[in-house]
Length: 138
Image (cartoon, rainbow, N blue to C red; front, top):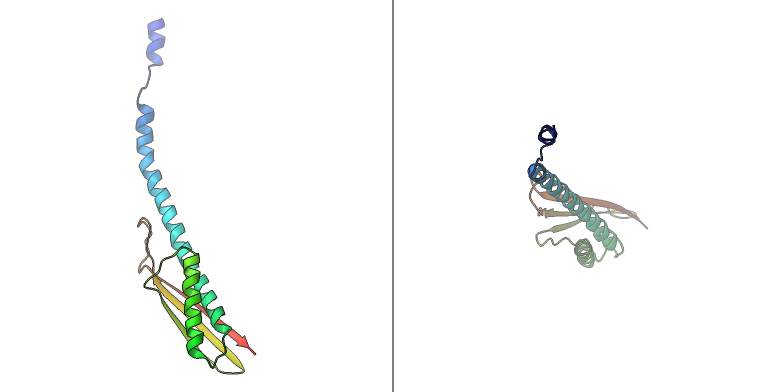
């Protein structure tokens, strides 16, 4: 009788290791994709933030000083990208003034290439764009 009971509850050595190995790869793929998506959204938000900061800095300069305005906006946008830990050597910062006085529109846009951490984000063009438009009333 003891031998029959022992046979029913036979040890299953190694089954936990096999189940762990089967679950580990899909888990790592899902976690890598989640990290990559988080990095992608952080990159998009950093572009939005740097366009906003650059436009705000440019809005504080007198409109007659266009070269100083564009330089200050570009420097502020680049500094905002560095604050967000995004290195973007190929980012382009474009500033346009839409209307003249009494209301002045300042449109700042930044375009940069997204560099994925792992490479699991299915983005079609891997280019991020952000545009901010400010109406400055004096």
